[in-house]
Length: 380
Ligand code: GLN
Image 1 (cartoon, rainbow, N blue to C red):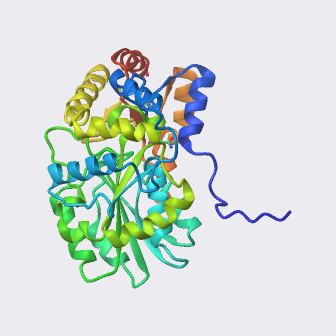
Image 2: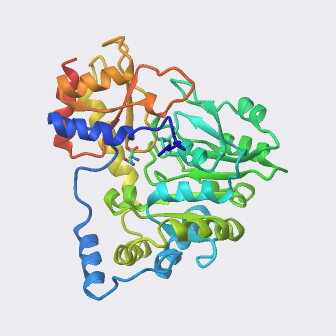
Image 3: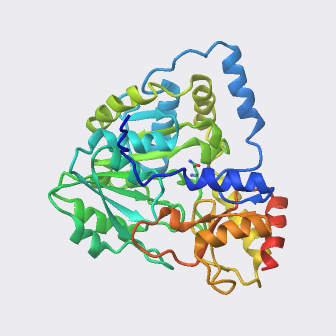
C-alpha cells in the first residue's frame, strides 16, 4: 500500500522520548511536565464516590452541566467574563484535544495560522492535518518577547487564526497588558480567530496578573480559551480540559469535539465540578509552585547553569553555555545518560530559529526530587 503521510516530518513527541529514556536509564525525570507527587486525596475520594454512585456512563457531549457552570463562574469571578455554560463552555479530554478541535473547527485548506516559536509541539501538526499553513514567528532568546511588528507584517487576507500561549511553555514567559493592546489592534476589523492556550493560568509568579484574553472583550469575542484541570489539580493523567468561546465559535468547536472523543469521562468531571465550585486547588497554586521554583533555583545557585526568568508554568529554562558548546538535543541526551537528569531541549519546539543553549526543567516535583536533581546538576 502506498501510504502518503499527512505529517511526514512528525516523529514521536519529545515528551515520550525523554520520559522513556529517563525510565530506561534510571534518570531523575525533569523532562515531561507532570507532578511526581499526589493530588488531594479528597479529589480521588470524590471520583470514587461518583463512580460508586453510578455516574459511569457517557457524560453529555459538551460536558457535565455542574462542571460547565463551575467553569463559567470561575471566568466571571477571576476575569469578569460572562460565558453561558450551555452554549459557550465545553469540556474536553485534555488541553491537547481542545487545541486540535479548535484548529480543525476553523482552519480550511490554504488558511494561514500564525504561531510563535518555541511552540508547543501539537500546534503545527494540528494546523497541518487541517491543510492549513503555519506561519511561524520567532520569539527570540533570551527575552522571548512577541515581535508585534512582525506579526502585523505576517497578517494576510488568508490569516485565519493566531495561536497564543501564556504562561508560555517552554519559555516560562507571560504576556502583559501591552501585548493585549497590540493584539487587539492587529485583529481589529479582521475575521481572525484566536486560540489562547492558558492551561498554566493558575501558575504565575511574583504577583503578576494573568492576562487572560477573557478580560478583554474585543479579544474574548473571537477567542477559544483553553484551560486544563491536569495542571491545576496535579492530575495530568486524568486528561480533562475545557474551552471557553463565544456561542458561534463553540457551535463549530462542538461539531468537531463530538466526533473526536464525543465526551470526556464522567465521574472525574463530577468530582472536578465539586472542587471548582468550592474554589479549591487553584487559589494557592501560584504560591505553591513559586516556592518550588525558588527552591530549585536556590539549589543550583552558584553552579554553571544560568537560569532565565521563570514567570509562570512549572518550567525553568537553564542556560548551559558555560558548561558545553553541544547542541541542545545532544546535551539533553548526554545529561540524561551520563548525569542522570532528564530535561527537554527547546529545539523540539522550534521550526526556524536556531536552538539557543538552554534546556527546560520541570519543577513540579517533590522537594527531595529537586534536591537530588540539583546535586547532580551542580556537578557539571
Ligand atoms: N505539556 C507537557 C509538557 O510540556 C507534556 C504533555 C505531553 O506529554 N503530551 O511537558
